[in-house]
Image (cartoon, rainbow, N blue to C red; front, side, top):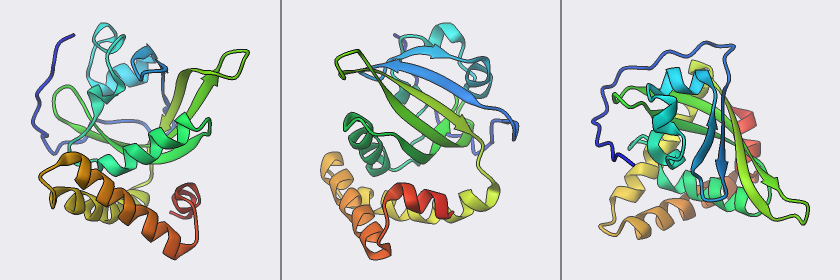
Length: 174
């Protein structure tokens, strides 16, 4: 597997308002299926995506605390909706509203994950970005990345508690 070290360009990778990015992963998060929209928007070839960890499209400006929330939720056998900032192979960015669900075998064990993603409206990004910037700033206060992520996660949980809503409820208020 080739490791990609890319610098963000600040340019958006175009995605149509009516398009859906669809992908499937195994239980460890390695991509097993990617639709053509995902291939085009991510700027990776299908061959590069299949077998790669889904984090291949992780943007450095995406808070790790939100990924912790996402993984905690789906590993608890629940679905989640989350705003995610991704990065293409060339360093361009694209925002998505992701719906991630676990897939189960006949005995109820998680065997895979499925994600459908659409382009959020500019106003939605404008509301989530300041919160994500706050979480990133909290993560950056710590030399230990795990400690930073845990502190930002606690901050996120605290903000949601003050609003008396779950992350998913919060996502749908945006």
